[in-house]
Image (cartoon, rainbow, N blue to C red; front, side, top):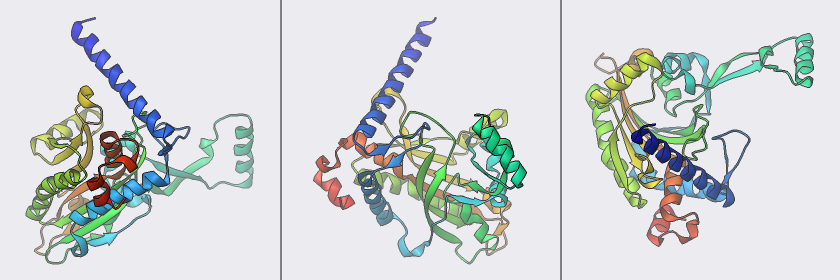
Amino acid sequence: MSTDTAVEREETSELERARRAFRAELLDAGLLVDTSVAGLYGRSGLFEDIVDGIDAVVRAAGPGASAARFRFPPVFPRTSFERTDYIASFPNLTGAINTFTGTNAEHAQLLAARADGESWDKWLEPADTMLVSAACHPAYPMFTGVLPDGGALLDVYGYCFRHEPAFDPARMQAFRMHEFVQIGTADQAATHRDSWIERGLEVLSDLWLDATPVVANDPFFGRVGRMLAANQREENLKTELTVRLYGDLDEGTAVVSCNCHQDHFGVTFDIATADGGVAHSACVGFGMERIALAMLRTHGIDPSRWPSAVKSRMSL
């Protein structure tokens, strides 16, 4: 074994221990509620108070009444999901909903298999709904057609699902994103994304979090995905604001993501600008649970002992 490999494995092991220790601390404090599935948690009332306080700071920095506010359920139509093309880029993160549509006889077969401890999934069929992967995805079908002058500015908040089972509490399978989305011309989208890098840093600074902007890429799947990721980085389409939850053990955890989609959703959902061009879009997404975890990691596991200026800002 080379020295570099040995060091890398030791660093990885130390990072994993730090993640598991933080998870245990959160569970022992009752802030998160464990389940039998890795990365899936319940939240205590205190944890929700922290999230609400963070969201108050996010909303104060947001566009306010100038944005149309939408709240969608965590599931949306399969037809809309397919048009996002998410299944092509992130099949491993996708969550599909299946249900039983069979006869009484088939139900009896399902129950017999279940009683014998066998798999009963084969009796389920795909439903017409999918789990939402990004909070803004359900919004785009609303804008098929021609946008008004000035485009559309949206405030979207909701639960998302990504199949990433892990013991790192910052990598949850179900989590919330508060997004501000601009749909319009290419210049409008780029300006929206760029402006939110600085504004996002200001939000995190208001929470006394030390964040760093990092040019990043989405975790595209497969060989083609590696090319997409390289293009995304080369064109500087994604910037993450990261906070080091585990010191120097890793490069930091993304808590805010500023993304320029170019004309992807404009093409797939047939959205045109007022002058007849294909619409572009951009969004900034605040990861509510991740910011809450960054607060707990930075200021301590007991919010009552956080700096008074931070608690005042969050109305805690």
